[in-house]
Structures are given as C-alpha cells and as structure tokens.
Length: 386
Image 1 (cartoon, rainbow, N blue to C red):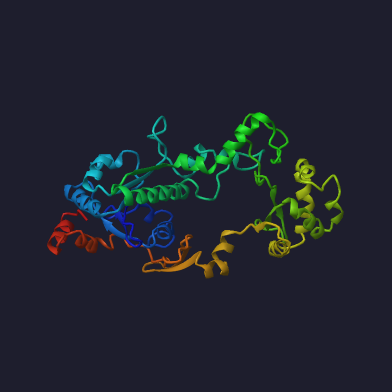
Image 2 (cartoon, rainbow, N blue to C red):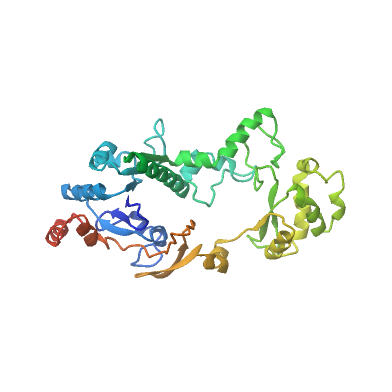
C-alpha cells in the first residue's frame, strides 16, 4: 500500500482482476467483498496494477515518487524481486518513508512465513495464556497482526517527525515476533523474577523454571480474577481487581464485614496466599446478581471491575455506538455493516468512516493524478496493466 500522510489519502495497490486475497476470504454475501476485507479497508482508494509488467512497475514508480509513505507486508524479499529495494525507492523519492511488516527479523527465522497465531506462539503469548492444566492458548485479540500494525504506526510517525528536521525518509521495519514479544514484556520480567523464588501474585501452587500459564490472574501488583454472575451463561462473568483500599467495601458488599479487620484477611500479604479462597467468597455474592448489577455496585464503591462483554454485546452497545467506537457503514454491494471506528480521537481531526473501495474503483482518477492522460490510461487497460 502507498500512504500519503496528509490525513486523508490512502491508496491501496492491488492485483488486477483478483485484488487483495482477503476480498474473497470468509465471504458471507455472494458477489460482494468479505467482511474480512470491508472492515479492514475503510477510508482507502483502490488502484489495480500488474507489477509483473514493465508498464505496471512504471506506474508504481510514479506513485512512489509522489508518496509520503509506502507500507507493504509481502513475504520476505517480494519487493526486492519487483526491483524496488529500499535503495531504489530512496533514490526515487528521498523523502519517502518505506515501512514493512515481516514475520521475523534477520537471522534463523527471517524467511519463515508467519500468521497471527504463529506470531503469538513465537512471541511468548501462547505459552503464558490459558490455565495451568490446559494447553497453550491463543488470545482473541489480534496482537500478532494488529499489534504489529500499531508498532509500525509508531515507527512511521517517528520517521515522519525526523523527516521534518532532516528532509529525508527512512526504512521502518517491524517483525511480528518482536511486536508480540514487546507486548509480553511483563512475562519476561516474571521469568527473571523466578530466580528469586515463586511468583506470589500468581495463583499457581508450584513453579518450575518458566513463567506458567496463570488463568485469569492479573499478574500485577493488584490481584484480579473473573468471577461468575447470574444467570450463568458463558460470558456472565465480571473481572474484579482487589486493591488494598477496596477490601473493606468489598467485605461489606459480600456480607462479610468482619473480614475487613480479621488478621487472616485484613492485609494484602494475608490475602495473597489464598487468592483462590478470596475470589470464591466474592463469587458467592456475584453469582446471585447479573454482571451489570455487580458493575454498578462495585463502581459505586470505587472498585475497579469490568464485565466480560461478548462480541454481540459490543456490537450492539449503545454507548459504543454513541462514541463512534462501533460504526455502521453503507457498502454499495453488501449493504450496511458494522465495523470499529477510529480509536484515536484528535480534537482538530475527527475521522468519519467511509466504505472500503471496490476493486480498482479509483484506478483512473489516481492515474490522472500522477500524470497519465486518458489515452494512456486506455492503453494501460488494453494491455491489462491496470
């Protein structure tokens, strides 16, 4: 993809005839682009270019000369095989920022293919996710794909800022494994803490030489756990953090006020060895209430908590809709669909979510913008270059 950092124009370069492979993946409406594609490609323009033809590579070169930022996530070496190494692109456009996501950095894994869960596996997430008596587990959050993208944006913005001083663009690279590893840094912290003995904030009874899977434990200084609520469905849970100041109001809410001053329960150190028993006491109370009732009662006492929200609850949440966190978009082929709004809110730069482009929808207009006249565009089409 080519991206201009003027706040508006994102040009997606696709293969003629087929386009981005995700247009057809997990297709749910016949004859229309998949939700996989539509939800990830709002607010872009699409141009089709056959990069295997000399004329197609010239179109790409013109785009690169005029772009602020180029982003690609092809397999290792693909851009080089097209003839567009960093050195070539930098010579074409000294100000260009060339950003890439790959599975791995240089070294043993460099040429290996990577996908979301592969990155989770090799970045430390899966070995530390799940319960101690179960297998390694992937997280539903896309920390491999989207997590890498967020890291790449940070690198792009840093390069863009430096360009305002130097006038020169630079190469920005993020490995999916590195991004996941960065998101797992607290587990690397705990790996080193194991040298001093057991990790007392974990609910695990025994510890070996590696950080164990620890279920829903917070893994931080304040213990937390997901406790069951009524009526007992698969997502009828609420996650509760027990801070020192929150213990007394919790004991009052659960009907056990005597535990606030009981030496066996009154202090964090006293509660730490029996977190399972502590949360079992809390669950006796929460299991008779809905998660929304528990949410209101706990927040009234300033106790950190959060109900487990299903995907259905999130997509139907009126508050998220009012905030623009979940938005409804009109698509010319598939009709209305919902997607995530822009999570970044800038006071002077509000973002309206526009539908994703149809394949090659903007080819003619983009070609005109980079200097092709109508006759040249027609010739490129006749040759199946675009």
